[in-house]
Image 1 (cartoon, rainbow, N blue to C red):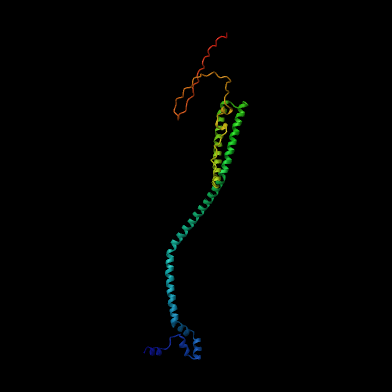
Image 2: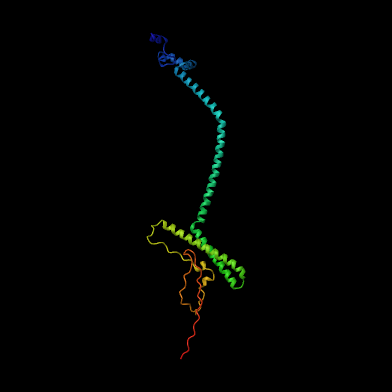
Length: 251
């Protein structure tokens, strides 16, 4: 029944089956009739489906355009904030590069070897100034009152710089030995400081002169000194010389 109705309805407009039943003259007339061709195309199912898809795309694009326009202020604010962040990032990068350069210069300037050279130069300068003050004192160009404070400051500075230089040298030697296998020998012997840096000025010249003849001491034993082992002992008193008895005359 349905097949009979479809056969009586005929083929769909614009379908190849409908054009197949036309004669050559009818097809030629159809090609020359543009309004009829246009109507046939518009009535075809494929064209109508494409038209529906077009309308759906237009509606979707319209909705997206409205949404984009509503988000445009937010986009502009985001762009402005991003530009500000980029500017801050550029400033931070420049500051970081500057600080890194200054850090490298400071590390190169204040390396242990450079500090050791600076301490040695300061030590030589302090010793040279001390020698100049001594020469001025010997030549009479400087008074004793002005010489003593300057000499004490110079000697104290020289001793301080010498101690710092020795400590730094020891630290550098330990750092160099840390990368090598530890030796099996004993520890390094204690360092001996020069007498001029430790002893006073007068003590560096030598011990005082000892008299050639000493008075005879008593033959009695010296009593033990009182004092605890942890406390320093005071000077031991010297015994007075014993008077000598006159010898009898020779017979």
